[in-house]
Length: 83
Figure (cartoon, helix red, strand yellow):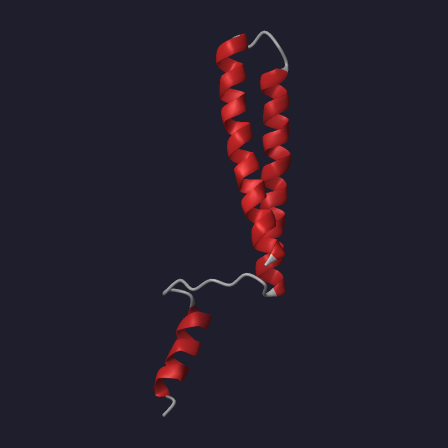
């Protein structure tokens, strides 16, 4: 459960950093370093987000329920075949 909360918080931080970078770009017109700092924060957040997602799938704490996922389809077929 904690992993999903961390992923959502990182994603929200990523979106906030994206819009703050846009705001700094429009307001400063590229004359200050705030846009670059926002970009570096966004890059760090994106790397952390991808790392937590990979960790979640690797450790089994996150799983895919997509219909094209073979593991899900096999377990679903086993449940349907059971009496």
